[in-house]
Image (tube, rainbow, N blue to C red):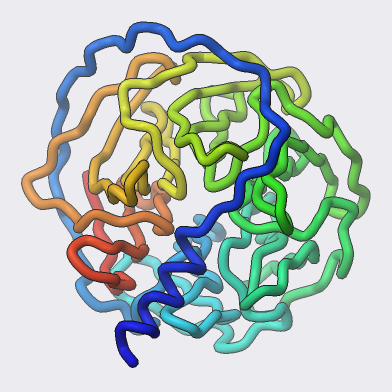
Length: 328
């Protein structure tokens, strides 16, 4: 019974469906040899009070780290947790107004945290919610104009929020939507970076960046794209130094962008950390202690540390991680 339980969970996470339409091809360039740097491990929380989970979301808001939703085995969550130090966690809302979900996307503006889309069981969502305090959630819309989806990205940038790509029923999306929280507009139905899901998006150096993921033909990606406004996009590199992957973590601070872990072809789970100041040149970061291989985790910068929160892996066996790692 336990093996069947894990097999069902693995199916939910690792099954992606190809569709026929292909994006414009971009020729591969010779990869630039990467450099090695190191950081130290300062904080390890081996067992969070909310237990193991994956495909959750995390943001930094009002001087706290936040974790919402996710999945563990066959249980999806709609709880909300916060922490001021990564070690001590407080349950802010054990059951928020929105349906339990995983594979949703989260961002924040000056006054609110925002959640969009996701999945529970076989049901995909296209609702949008916001909260000023993590306890009280208000539904902005029950049915946004974008198709219901999971493993998309949702990022606040230049006074707007951009929703990009993701996996809808039977289709991997290439669309970009923009909203002020009330009104939604389609930027493009087919972005130049093509269809992708399980990618990551971050704001760094006054640009919004899209990195990696999986396309509609189940090709794992390690390309890097950027935009100064969210509407016009440029290719930084078609093939970064890190191996192609999806459902990785991505965050940024004033120094640069930090990419963590993820899963590649043949269900190869990573436990690496990569850093870039320009999106083109990436260097691998060495650590004295390191987290186990994983994907479906989250990465954020908080209190001058890089944080790795929870996640899922099949190496060596199916596991939903309960741990949190902090790096200086």
